[in-house]
Image (cartoon, rainbow, N blue to C red; front, side, top):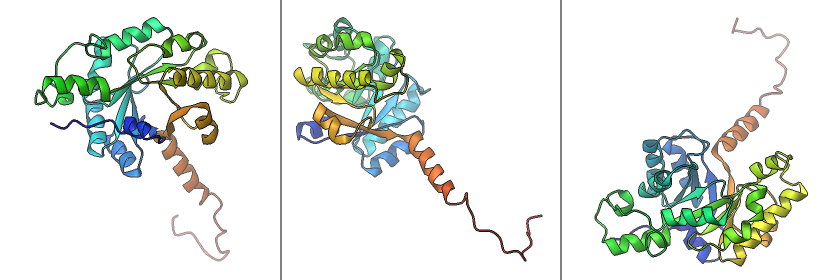
Length: 268
């Protein structure tokens, strides 16, 4: 049985720069719009977004319908919180607030099958096509086509980023400029020298150890990010896009022409 390969990994291996849209809304139709608009992946979330597991499964299914990847940022919970999205057929997971190499090794141990890790074996969910996939094929696909991204977003994590990047078994690093800037007392100042230096150090560490780096958004000019080593690009968020669209529409009617002096309003 043919299992779907990762679109993001395919693009990266071809030397391209895949795109990902962050999703805060829970309606699967938003995922479908993203797919029809041309993004390569959607970034779903259980850390900051009140998704339930059934809703998340429907979002993942919508992504699969349009042949785009789904990456789920998990909450910092238990082994089961990391595995459920994968068994719901998410293309991968993003693990926030990783601080040490030991944490990175534990995550790999939880989410990769032998010989890479010690993930518990099931295969009876949609990722294994409800036991319709031969076991060897299921294990190989899970280890090779499921994406694991670790998020670096604190000064403590930055101090250990080279050791974290050296851990085998995961695919990429995501620099979190929002939390990093907040934790150094410069919340939201994404162009502060310390934040820029951290962004560059994360990319350099990932590249040195054969990992890709993902942006949380277009936090610097595209060409600059490419030169720094970034390869998977966040292009924004659904809620930002909707808000911007409404604001632009409202600008068209905020300064209407004056009504003729002789006219009377029919609305009173």
